[in-house]
Amino acid sequence: MSRLQLRIYDVVPSKMDEFVEVFAQVVEARARFGFAVEGAWVTEEGDQFVWIARYDGPDSFEEASRRYYESDARKAIVPDPASFLTRVETRMLVPVD
Image 1 (cartoon, rainbow, N blue to C red):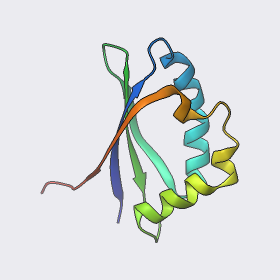
Image 2: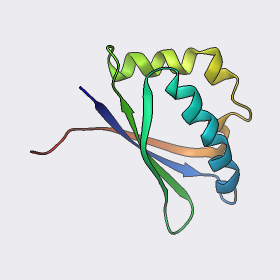
Image 3: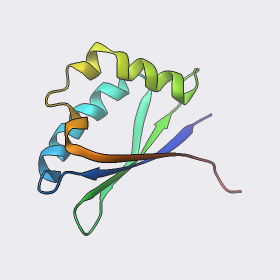
Image 4: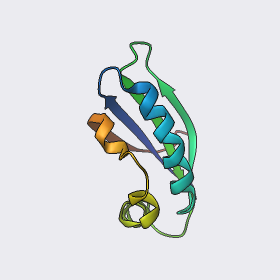
């Protein structure tokens, strides 16, 4: 069963282009842990980055995320994606029938 998480990031003003470049490394590193990106968007105002992460693996989303954040693959991403963010909001999504 797919698990989806909505992720909303407030990005440091004038750093969106740099963050988007680094995000490509995030996508690649997360894929090693069973994650995929359903879609990614920038708000018209240009200061928020919104994306949906999908996890289809055997563990919980939280356990897979923990392994990702503790991994050498995540630690190797330079510059650190978190350094571009001023706020992070996450929400698990549930499908509507």
